[in-house]
Length: 72
Image (cartoon, rainbow, N blue to C red; front, side, top):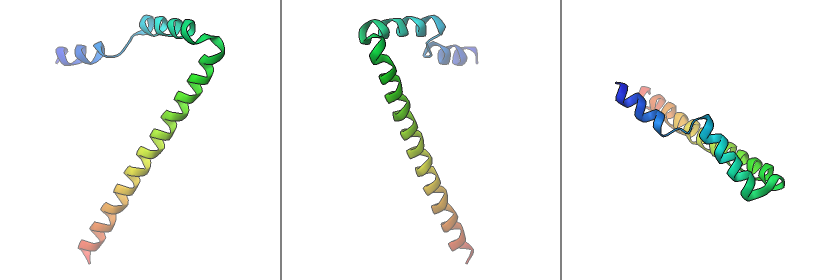
């Protein structure tokens, strides 16, 4: 059980790693471009989440229709 938990933690960067990544991104892209990249990443994540929720809702509706059809 401990092996599974430790293997899951290895893939997630910690606070120090995230700080180093942020500093490198700041150096590469500069302070003016970094907010634009963050905004674009947030919009992409939001669109992906909305699409995923839409697919799940569609799947749930199909399941409900199939159950109603079986009950008739």
